[in-house]
Length: 155
Image (cartoon, rainbow, N blue to C red):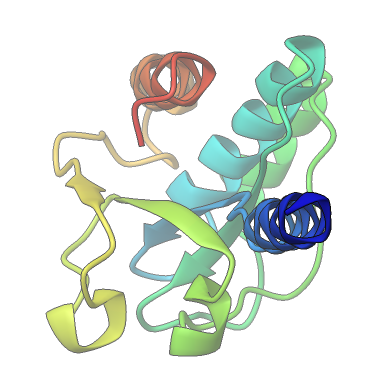
């Protein structure tokens, strides 16, 4: 009987370790070109998650990625003093969602890509090039909600 309990405890440990290793930790922010709104959202999310010691990180993607980051976005984030990924915008793929816990989009995301993953869609963000401050403030409010949800276990 003791051998059975020992083997059972090992099995439980291995299952728990496997589940912990499979925990999803990525939030995917998506905008049409992957060059402005999603970049701002990912940058602010990563800062807030780090400040709150949350085990999540964000990436920015586009549904139809453009060649370069938005000039207004780069200038705005630099002025805000927020570090951000300066890589070339990338188009959202299913592979981006392998480790994703949630998608936050600023444009429609195809169900064929998002699958059963939760998608929070926001279509009320002003043009970054016309009013960076207003756009950033609204994006940050959405980002804060995601951070709060994740901090309280609401996936």
